Length: 201
Image 1 (cartoon, rainbow, N blue to C red):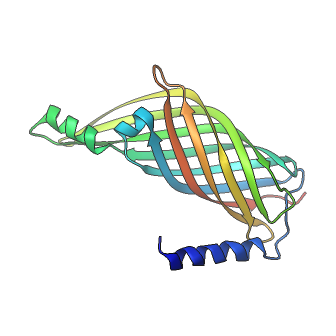
Image 2 (image 1 turned 90 degrees about the vertical axis):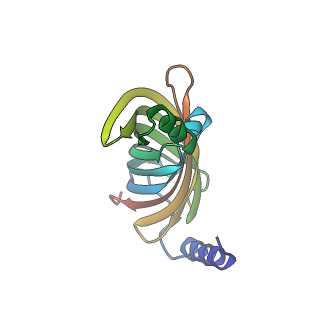
């Protein structure tokens, strides 16, 4: 990122944070959200998959101005790592192989906002749910896949900025640990988040 772009982004966030939007959430507030950004595999999963894309939809309910409970559905997709593709090409020579991984996450979460009355609200989030993961391999126009589902947990930090009387923008980093058989499977989601109030309590 260039210095000029970094200064422009910082100025934009500062403008949003000091805007005249109403600050804080109220008990009973319902907030919908859309998120998108990077999915970064780590550990053994990082040896098999490249950095990919993750997108999510969610809904949160404020049980107090500082705490929300909610649910999310998230889709992630990664290409095969270069090392895995090289190994598969060796196995299927003279044909070449390609493929991808997908992870669907269906989960519940809580968020704790450290400064609930501010226009800029950093928060901690933690949750868990079911993860369905699928590997697909394609060789000479023929594809095969294998999928499974396991429970997992996640946690991370984010920040929310008021962008209007009923809209918010933010950034979130979330670490996932899936309880797969043998070694667990881990990845990060690094995402921009757009959220919007669904009611006025």
